[in-house]
Amino acid sequence: MSQPIRIGKSFAYAFWILFLVMGVYVFDGFLSQKHNPNQSPDTYAVGNEQVLVLKQNRMGHYVASGFINNYPVTFLLDTGATNVAIPKHVADAIGLPYGAPFRANTANGIATGYRTEIDSLAISDFQFGRVSASILPGMKDDEILLGMSALKRVEFTQRGDTLTLKSMF
Image 1 (tube, rainbow, N blue to C red):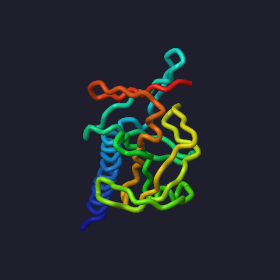
Image 2: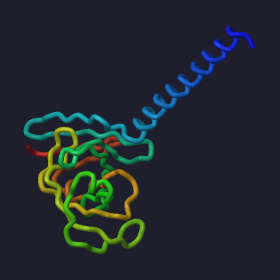
Image 3: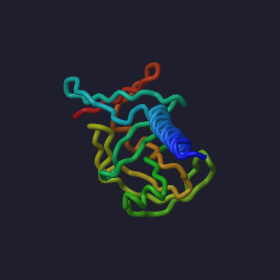
Image 4: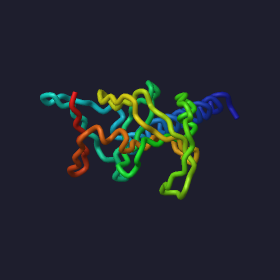
């Protein structure tokens, strides 16, 4: 095989590899945006209320990026959860203390969890201090279930595919 043909094939292989890598990168970002359309949610003020509007994802859930004790996390709003529920591996990464163990009835059956308290929880400019939470070793995903221990502090209204959260400041 001649030198120009080998060089041409090498460039063709390099092009297709680069094309595939770029495609994966773009497609991964597209899927991430579909799963969490609220990666950079904004808040605005109306009088003395702070308002946050979240969009539903393609599965019909409200997912939003935020922080627990300044550690970046992804929240899944869950009005059926009593407390904020945190997977063990995420709680360990954040450095949350393990409190008293308890037994909980979850969607996946009875599980052992540990009580903890979050110093600060934030979604955009929505800030919550001292929130009761549960560390659940059985949770495998990275998402935090944002339960009623946080959501009871806000007023929320769902219309169509949006959820509006309001909080007094």
